[in-house]
Picture 1 (cartoon, helix red, strand yellow):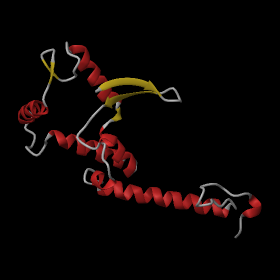
Picture 2 (cartoon, helix red, strand yellow; picture 1 turned 60 degrees about the horizontal axis):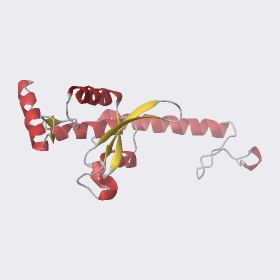
Picture 3 (cartoon, one colour; picture 1 turned 120 degrees about the vertical axis):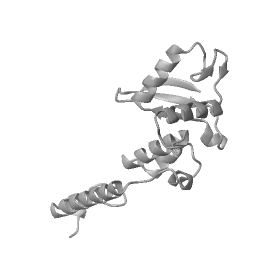
Picture 4 (cartoon, one colour; picture 1 turned 60 degrees about the vertical axis):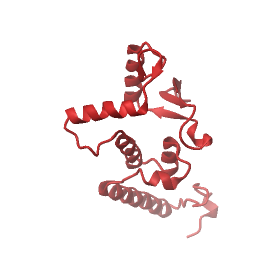
Length: 171
């Protein structure tokens, strides 16, 4: 795994982790994963504090095993009196659900998660009733804007998403 900081064409910085392998198909397992600014800052602090090339390491030579990370998580969970159902994988479900709640489409979520199908990603996304209601509000707003464009004589071509020339608009 390799972490990089990059710039968008608009000049905004973002960080990514390059995953060279994973448990899925080689096509989806090897990928770059964008990081939130908070995650990037936390990983950078961890990197600076470590004498190892690995972010999570035992000593300076060996990576921390996933089972060891799970044991550390369980210890912290018990100290904080969190429910036993709160496992490390819960964080993955939460992140993917929040992506969906913030408007990420299923294919984007699939790519971020490294899934090979949208069906797999659906198991991770649990939209709240508020999110579903907000989606309908956004649809209603979009429909209202389309009606206003029609009333103004500016019909949108649904195939291309463009407004045809005035001479081709029919009422």
